[in-house]
Length: 367
Image 1 (tube, helix red, strand yellow):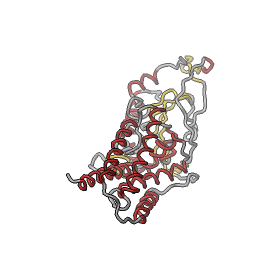
Image 2 (tube, rainbow, N blue to C red):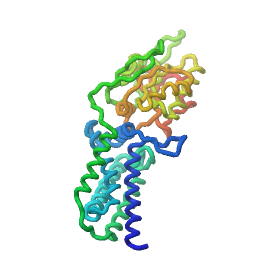
Image 3 (cartoon, one colour):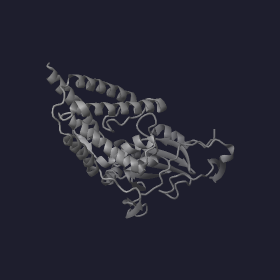
Image 4 (cartoon, rainbow, N blue to C red):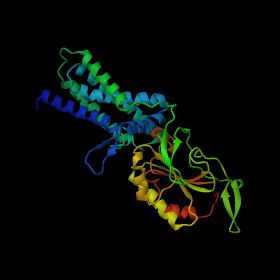
């Protein structure tokens, strides 16, 4: 293979890597029924911001600008690697520099938190651990160095082509996924518990999170007379979920974070409904939905077989309230405002029906 042909193979390979990475960051996954990507820029970018940028200390406003600019630059580099203007002098060195920054960030993340979770390099489309992403970036840098060595020197180039492509890609991301004002108040419809009528609820919420806690002091006990028996209960406390439901801290409650189109969320809700039918004193279930695919909520409850009280909030407040590092479906078992158990995701912390049945039927203990 001639040098020129090899150079083009490398250029196309690396360009495809950047373009796929950028496309993945504006997609939320694959559509199961069809062999193509489900693009949802606002959802995907908001998820990237909350899961990847917020833990790094980015503010909500800065994260919105940075995420769109970064993805725009990835698109631009993908296109510029296929363009001959200043390829060897600017584009290749800039691409190597960006990958080095990614490697340093991922190395720090691995050192601090370990090789866990999705690094976000390919969004939610192709999950990768930080170490996998580091290896991928090192290989890409090796290919770029090889390309730089065999690439012929730049001929007469036009800097305006580079700047125009870069600016167009960045501005295109801001147009594709417009930012929402962080202080704005939006409303979404929800079914009223009593008469199933549509009501408006405000989705501006506190962004504080509540970690799972255990009540481990004997002072945190009180007794309640139920059926003439004294039953130990955790001392009442205030959770951060009262902004959704004022009575969420009274007695036993099950508070859920679901996405309307999420199959795992639907299966979890169906299991909760089956337990509701099975146990007379099963805790009341309350749901907060993400407003992504909110039109699927009726189908959600049709699949479940019962409509639980629910409210709908924006993507960023949803992820923030669910908590850093957590994923859907999120199921929280509350007792007098205390978080007794917090299930999330579909891995080791996923909701377990058998374990949960045992948990809700066992007496309270602070040990």
